[in-house]
Image (tube, rainbow, N blue to C red; front, side):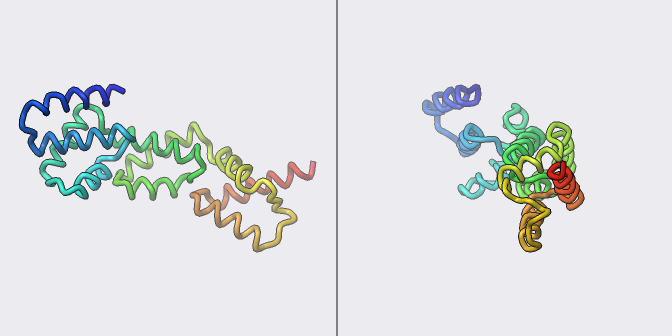
Length: 176
């Protein structure tokens, strides 16, 4: 909300004067950030795709970071929590996706560690299995079906150890 009010005020002040490319780039960046959070690299790529100069983009990104509107650590933390909650992935999968978004390995690892304390791997795995594979019973499933489920979960970033221990514990629960 604060970002939108600031953008409107800036547009009003620019209407009276000649708008320079630096202020255009800045306003475009603010507009993109008003829709959703971006990493610095991601925002830079979007702005360069619009044909803006790299010097103007760098200046706008620095200004936004200085004002607190653009923060890679905050972006990585929020995106990691969203990815885990939505079942998009866990661990290495999130690390790879954050890397594609231009987040450094150090920041991404820290965000994953912080999120892992709030969303344990076992609980996240259980949530995905119950949502996606509710009828799957590893004790009676054919080998091909097991491979399909295990591969899916590994592609989501879960370790093989966690997957096998989850299904082993689940088998023990069924036996009771």
